[in-house]
Image (cartoon, rainbow, N blue to C red):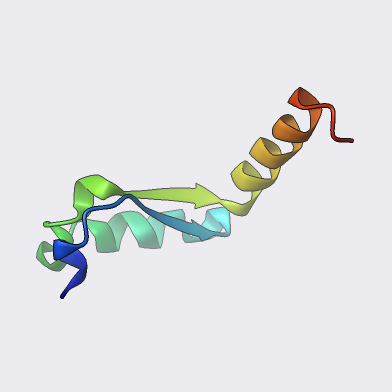
Length: 60
């Protein structure tokens, strides 16, 4: 089984300064079968979403 056979969403989490590298790599032919199932998230986005969730559910 290969990743193209595994039907799921993929997330790439990295520093924001790596976004341009991600964008450059994801357009390569090797990634065309999964391109529409991969999304980039910066560490800052993940942290922000986490904090919002904590506030929403009054965990903090």
